[in-house]
Structure formats: C-alpha cells, structure tokens
Figure: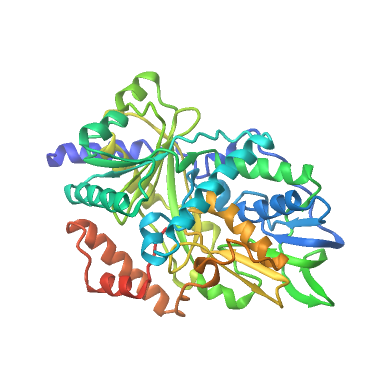
Length: 476
C-alpha cells in the first residue's frame, strides 16, 4: 500500500470509532434485569456461593439441581454478570484445557478423558439453556482457527495430522485457502481448522442473567451489591462478613476469579490481563454477502497475539483480542476498561482482514479483566478442612469451563471422589506467579517475545523455549 493510501486508510479506521460508546455492547441490552437488594442482617445456609459470574451462578444452579433441599445463598459484589461474564466474546467452548494443544502438552495421559468431559459439559450447558428457557442466542456453529501466514497454514495442517494420529480429530476439518474463504471471505486467510461441534456462540450477558433467574426460581437467595469482605471459621462451618451483614454456612464456594480471593494463599496463582473488543453496527445484507459467513462460526487467528471474532444475533461483528495488557502490581481498576490506543489498533486490523467492509462503523468499544494462570487453564482446591472450595484461572475460556469447575467445587465440598476429582488437572496446581517486580518483568519479556515470534515466522526465542520447558506462560 502506498504511503498516501495507508494514511487515508488509517484516517478511515479512526473515524470508524468516532461514535463508539466505551461500554460493553452486551450489557446495554434492554432486557437487563434489575439487581436484587443487598444483604442486610444475618443469613444462614447450607452453601454460600461468593461471586455472581458464571462460576458462581453454575455452582448455585448445579447445587440446587443435585439436591433441591440444599439451602443456597449467592453474594455478588456489584451486579450479576457485570464483569468478565458480561464482557467476553461469547465463545462457549467444550475445551477444559484452553485448547487441545495446551491439554495434550500438559496432560497427555488424560487428554481423551478431558476431551470427553468437555464435550459432555458443553452438552450439559446446551441442555440447561433449553431446560430453563434461557434466551441467550445459543448457536452451536463451531469455530474456525484461521491461518493468516504461510507458516501458520503449514502448522495447522501438521497439527490436524497429529490430532488424527492421536484419535482426537473427530468433527475437526482442515480447510485450505479456497475452502476457508468459502466459509468466510478474507484476503488474509490461508487455511483453517473448523471444529464443527466443539464451540457454541451465545450472548454472554443474557446467559448470566438467565442463570440468575433459573437459580432464583429454584430457591437460591441472591444478594447483589454485597461484597464479601472476610472469611473465617465459625463453629462447624464458615462465616462471611459483608458491609451490612454476614452469612453463616456449612460450606463456601469461591467463584471470584480475577478479584482478590478471600483465601490469601490463592492470590499468587492468578494475574489480571486486560482484553479489549469492538462491536460494529449491524451489517446490511450486501455487506454480509461480501464476506460470506453463512454458517456463523466463531473465528480466531493463529498468531500468538491473536484476534477472535464472531457475528451477533443481529449480524454485528465483534472483533477482539490482540493486546493483552497486564498492569504493574496486578491492579484491577475501572479506568483500565477503556483503552483508545488499543481500539485504534483493533480497528486497523479489522479493516485489513475485511477491506470489503470499509465504511462500517463501530458502535461500542470496551475492555475488561481476565484471570490468567501460568498453565492457562483452571485450577482447583479446598481450604478450612474441606469447608471451602475454589476454582480460578480460566484464562479467557471460562464461558463453558466454569460449569465444569462448578461441578468440581461441589464434588470437593461434598467430599466425593468422582471422575472429575481424580483428574491430575484437578489434583495439581500451576506454578504461582512471582512477586513484583519479577512478575511484571517476566510478563513484559514474554509479551515482547511472543510479538517477535509472530513477526519472524513463529520462531520462538530462548526465553519462550525456556518457558515452554518449564510449563509456564502468559495468555489471555
């Protein structure tokens, strides 16, 4: 592209953001429910769930479905679904291990069982959505991982052959350049892997709100604008203090994810990563036809600094990812949710991928924090003689995996040995992150190295190869 054309293109990309509202598109839905009142006074229950995102909501719902007589209370510090559960891309994946490559590397002896449990978990989500009448635009259309560089296309083909050799390629199809562009037409696409059944697309906030309604219909008492402040033993159970009251419970499930755990020893296992997304205006019939996308799959590219993108129910394109921003000290602050420099970068990438959509405007631009851990997938544990259970570290793939994590927490609290609790993935924890300034320095070096690998044919430098050998990493 000539310099003058590039300048005009950049000006157009920036102007496409001129009317974008810095709020999550999903949370602006007119069907958003009113919050429940805050807790005042003292409550008692069998199970207290802390956190009103997917992790806590699935725990409360599954607890009542396992035993309708179980008395369950859920506390949410702000409003149900306001954080990561209402801000994500709406990719609900079967994978419990942040993708098959990560799972095969870390748990090769368990990977077939993990994949089967993941498929059953996604089936369970689909069934729960239908059973409780949750209107969340659920579409099990699958996902295509696309290659935008020649080396990535070669790696996708090699990976598909490896999956076939391992007996893990069921429902996964390799697409060459012509085949992938027949599905979604971008001049940047060189190949793809289509997982036809392993991912569903949904409206993330509507899922959270629907789970809240289902919980309450089963008798769960939900209190919003009620942060949990302290967790202590109280007789044979536990007590949690809130600003205007307290809850005494036989067992406690912690689903706070990126927010500081009530168990201090768990905090070093996660760090917050800020992820950002854009949402376009609805595409016209002509604009949609220009890119195809008739099968409505989710898409993600194969770079280390990757994008994820999908169609909404009203044919907007959500375009997110690439920048994964970690702030020194692991701070989670509202002002980090808005990052214009990242929006401008994402807009440029969007029009490079879909030049035929020049002139489309963005209506929303937002960000939010994800909890990542050094193995990229959830970890689990108990405290206080088994009266407290926790799950965290989903690393951006929690829309589906949190339901599995909820069942793990309930198994642990009930003291049951199940096929879930016997997994090495459940029994072992990742390595914690080091204290500052070492965490920030290591993450910054990893991000620089990943960007360098993307620019040099995927070649990983000594730092990344060392991290690979240690089983460590940083992702969103």
